Image (cartoon, rainbow over all chains, first blue to last red; front, side, top):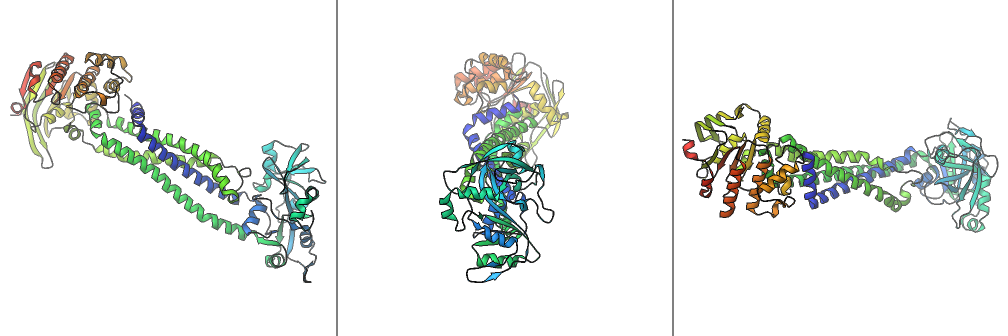
Length: 411
Length: 211
């Protein structure tokens, strides 16, 4: 009888113990896989975040919320900031306040408008102007096909949007409008340009003109009445390139005297990394513990099982079974249980992550923007399989040390 | 297979205490020997010596053409697989396997069903091949152990107290089956069970052997 057959028979005849062990491994693998995927998702926020100059301005909110909403396209429909403030900053006009005070910003290198107003195939449609594409410091976005939008009804696609949806210049698309009301209405746009890939959030965004966005907002007077005191000419964010030492001036101007809030992008990224970094480290530590727990469960089960069978193993040795054959039997048992645990764990991982993602909401990047492949959990599977095989080593060593003569004398 | 022992000394325990010694002993091929003796004198160790499960402190053990004392552990294991059949007092069988699977443990080829089934039939366990051994009575388990010897390709069979746990009827049945199934084999049974003496061509006292 081959070691594999012995292993299969042993597993099927000890169904209850086998099932418990497989479930233990499966849960370990699932927990480990989910934690690793959450870690990767958390990491993706930094690696795939859009570039946005030195600072951002958005409606008053938490700094991280503004950062993720503007540069990662995350979160619910943001509050508006007035276009007039943007205009003043862009042309460095004096900004006058209701209390009579005024200030003339002189710290701006460039400022880019951004307003989100539609969704298409899981990607967001942003309203902006040419400054978004022609940026200072060699950060410009270049066109792989076509040109910039020139009028309403035209749209430019990020590289990932065009590639994943198979779109090209000349195609017409119907975008679902997004303005925080229902029922949403649709916009029909013609693709006039496709950008080169940047490896950032900007690849996963569609771009149209500010006029397009504002005319869409203007269609919903109820929404404008509810969310804007400035009419439809509003923005969600400004991306600001500052002159050296310019943030303090921007912060003083915007945060103290307006409805908007300026954030320094590097500070908020550091803060986000600090916040999620601790969680990630704890997650990785817990993952290690969980995997070790699964391995110990297998080890304990195999030790108990083979200790109970020590005289039967001695009988096998007396019948002419080599130690290597019995060792292969044990290894097969470990590998088979590990493999079954992996399949179970992968299935649980597959089912649980979307559930967890929906529970965590905006704490994670949306699935349509940053999908999480099950294969990210592959290192956990490998670790679990190796742990399971390693767990067999202890009963294997004990079996190797067994004196067949002594074990048989009691029979 | 003829068995020959010469100048054997067996010491056991951490103090290397002498258990027994045999100056010269031979068992001819095909002989059926019942080895009697009181407990604790080393009968089981003697059987293990002949099967290559235990090495003497000194001396030569020759089974057929195989000098066990010259062989490695792996070679002795292969020797047992090809040439030796073993029956113990109890716990002969692997509990979680069926009767048939236990018999197949001793067959040379994987899934050698026919050979295993005919062996089971020969010991009166035909039709029970798919039952777990745990549901068999002790007598039936010993008969299954005899079937395992039958199904194997052994030319020498060692049995260690195979009937001591059995009632009268089962003891006779197992002894008869064992001797009959070993018609062409060399058989050594170690036992102090007087009920089975009549089945053996040769009976020897272990104390005399080691004198």
